[in-house]
Structures are given as structure tokens and as C-alpha cells.
View 1 (cartoon, helix red, strand yellow):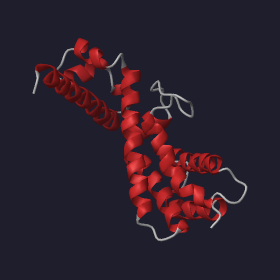
View 2: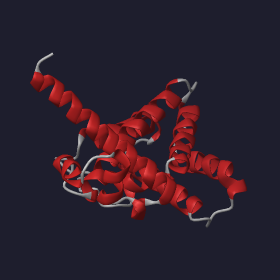
View 3: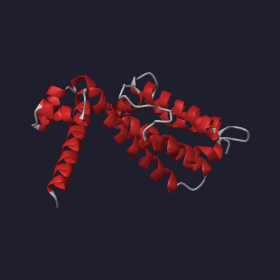
Length: 192
């Protein structure tokens, strides 16, 4: 291995450490607790080293969001790949999405609530975000209904899931009705 390859590998490892540490800190204490000073202390590197990877917290949030998008896409595809039919696939998608949001609130915030400097629904949207949307579209396109554009249907279904995730987390919905909400969403929006 050349010196250049070793340096690139070490740089990539430092970047992974920064993102993992930021994510861990955000999940434990919230995004307000994630500062470059605190991250530098936790990873035992100087702030200039941290700034050599990310210009600031906004880019770190963006890196966490991209990681989360990739995880969400994988989770949705895994859950829907084992479901027997369209109804089961859509239900699995909805449950997986809501479960991911509940288990990873800081990552979910990085994806959909905070400014990570990422373009959404644009030409320059990063591939992990496009892939997360595609994971939803793959299942939802088959239940959009005649004359309904599959991507538009996916946006509406996704917006409904996002609303449920956000309102549930804020304690504005009764937890005991969570399964019924998913059933209602699937029954009323999807053409099965």
C-alpha cells in the first residue's frame, strides 16, 4: 500500500469517526449538543482536523442525513422484499419507515428537519437521497392507481408517513392507535 493510499484510508476513517460520533451525541443529547469543540474532544483530534473534513455542523448534519437515507432505503427494501403481495409490501414499508423514524430520531431530524445543506427533489440531489425515495417508489408505484403519477403518489404517501412520525414523536397522537393509523393509510391511499 502506498503512502497516499494509507493517508486516504486514514482520512476516510477519521471522517467515519466524526459522523458516527456526531450521530451518537445527537441521539443521546440532541443536535444542540453537537458542536465542533465537543466532537473534537470526543474523537481526540483538534478542531482544525475536524474542519479539514467538514466546514461545520451543517455539513456534519448532511453527512448523517446521507448515512440515514442509505439505511432507510436498505431497511425499506429488506422489509418489502419478503412481503407476499402489494398490501403486505405497502404495510411493511409504512411500518419500517415509522419504526426507523422512532428508533433514530436524531438521524430522522438530520434527514427531514434540519438544514444539512442537501438539495432535495433537485437535479443535484445526492444519490443516497434519491435512492431512499426510489425505495419508497418501488413499492408504492404498484398501488398508485390508474391515472396517478407514481412519484406524485409516493410524495403524498411519504408526506403522510412523515406527518405520523413527527406527530407521534411529539406526543400528539395516541400510541395505542399506531397500528390502526397504518392500516387506515394503506386502506385509503393505496389502490389494492
